[in-house]
Image (cartoon, rainbow, N blue to C red; front, top):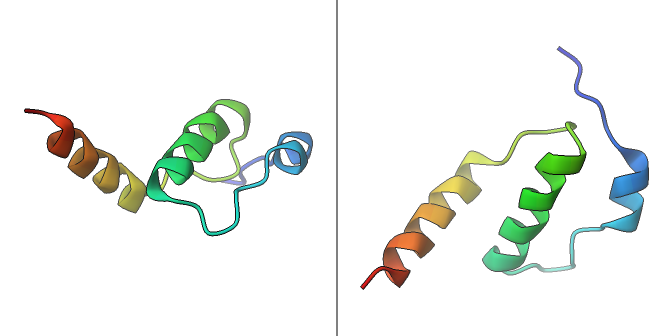
Amino acid sequence: MKMTINEVWHKSHPMPKNPSIEQRIEWYTKHVKHCQCRPFPEKLKEEMKKLSRAKTP
C-alpha cells in the first residue's frame, strides 16, 4: 500500500529543528490530519502516555 504525501502541507509546516517531545507530538497530531505519508509513530504514542500519567495527580 502506497501512502500519499501532501507536499504543500509539508513545505509549509516543517518539523522544528531539535524538537522537544511536546513539539513533536503537536506536529504529528497536525500531520495525521493533513497528510497520510506515514502513521503516528508508536514511540511518540508511548511518550504521550507517559506525559499523560505524569500530569495526572
